[in-house]
Length: 83
Image 1: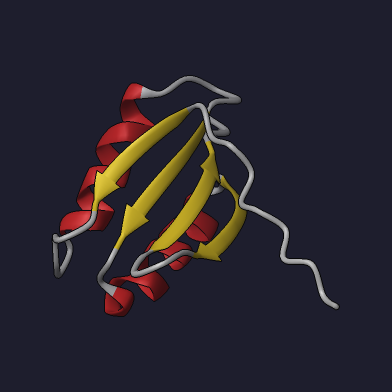
Image 2 (image 1 turned 180 degrees about the horizontal axis):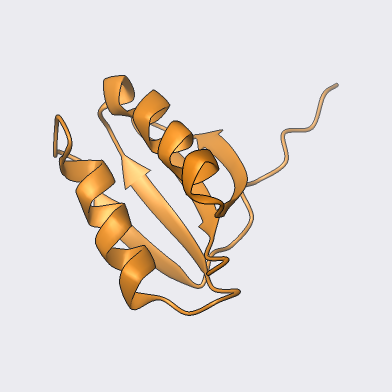
């Protein structure tokens, strides 16, 4: 039997389920700007088309991508603020 590991617990949750287009990424960017170095944020989003843009933005800006965790009906992207 294969055990599925749960997503790590983030310090803050950014709720973007039900938002589409660039809105989930915009909410993450706002939370990162308000966050502090070392803080972990969990972006919960139901729009899978935006997932690629979120991951690219995190990598391009130098923040840490802890992981992408599929949940029931949404994805959870956990990000570490690095600057």
